[in-house]
Image 1 (cartoon, rainbow, N blue to C red):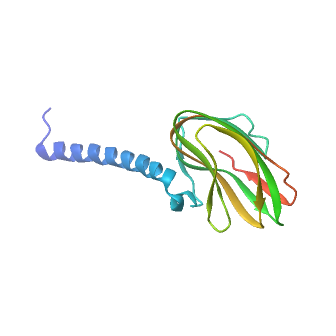
Image 2: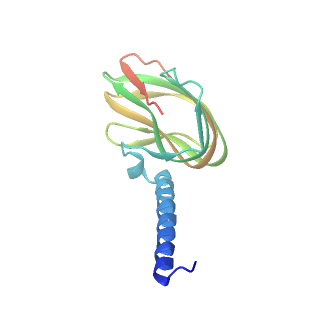
Image 3: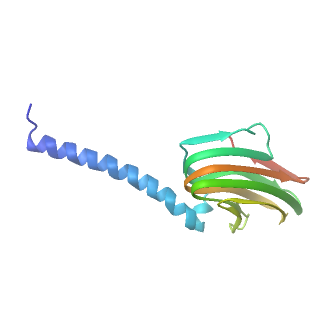
Length: 161
């Protein structure tokens, strides 16, 4: 069966449209990595080839293995009712891609918690307000373990995936 020129043109336009839509979505997620305005947005935009959280029932802990992670994924919201200090402990191992964890303050300031492969702990002052801890990545393959401790006067919500 021979396709008419019009049918062939419509088929090619359809294939081109599908290809461009897929590429645009992917590249938009890559823009998040270096753009704080995109990082502070409430709605997440991410894709994982693999996402396995071994600590899914523990609110103040994450033990996550991931592959093919692109975008912005909020892992915790932290509601602070009175000024406090919170201890954050972390270990991350990145095998490929780019990866970081950021803290978004109630004033929409972005603070880097860790970048790429990192290990450490820090005590962070949290004035009253709502905070977000987010994973940011571009084609990231690796793992992260994080704990939040000393959480008196704080409500931590681990977002279900």
